[in-house]
Every structure is written in structure tokens, then in C-alpha cells.
Amino acid sequence: MRVLCNGIKGHYLDVKWIFVVSAFEALLNSGDMNVSAQFKKRVAQLANYFKVTLTADEIDKAYQLRSKLVHAESFLFGLNYILPQSDHVPLYTKLETLLRTTLLTCLLDETFGGNFLDDASIDGAWPVNFPVRKTKKAP
Figure 1 (cartoon, helix red, strand yellow):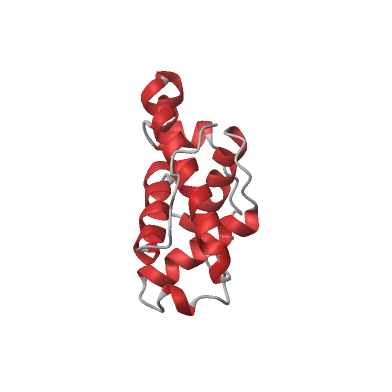
Figure 2: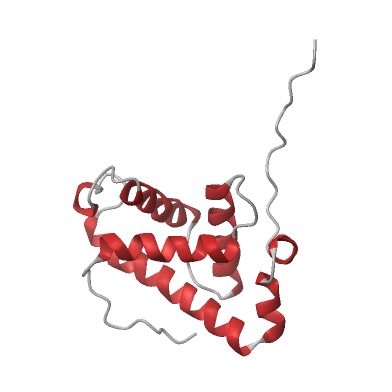
């Protein structure tokens, strides 16, 4: 796989985290339940599909960073407890490369692009098993 984002620096990384994670959410989430789980599990599936080395921990940290930033809980320089500053650019680069590769493949391969047509297509191509919620019995 060709790296499409050579030379990424830490410029505007606070905003870039929000956009790259939000782009994956827009592409991969079906429905509004278990949004973070959909992101984490389906990004891992895409990474595996394209042979991009992304661990579950890295994906989780990316989501945590995005959440803290988008909800204005902190600036990126204050989130070293989630991910050390030295790891921000390398992880962001992997995520952006995966996103670019996914979008390019959607454009060039109609069959692959069909995996993102609607919620049913997403669920079929990138299955995620969620825990069943227990419902309270009526008295």
C-alpha cells in the first residue's frame, strides 16, 4: 500500500483528530447505538483488510482523543495521559492513510464501494456484535 500522506507534521493536529475520526464514523457507523464500539471494531476490520497495523489500543486512544477534543475537555497538549505527544503524529498518520486508502478504493472499485451504500450494506460487510441489552420485565 502506498503512503498517501507523506510529510505530515503536528500542525493543526487538534482539528485533524476530530476530522479523521468523524470521517470514519460517517463512513462506518450504522445507526446511533454503540457509536464508539462501531468505530473501534469497524476501523480495526478496515485496517485488517488493508493490512494497516493498528492495534485495538491505538484505535481506542484515537477515539478518546477525538472525544476529549470535540467536547472541549482539553487541548491536545493536555492529553498526554491518553497518548504521549511523541505518538500523536505516527498514529494520526496511520489513521489518515487508512482513510485515504479506503476512500480511494471506494472510488476505484464499485464492489468495495458498495459496502458503504447504506446501514444494511455496512452491517453486512463490517459486522459488529453488540451485547444484548437486558429489558426490564413489566410488573
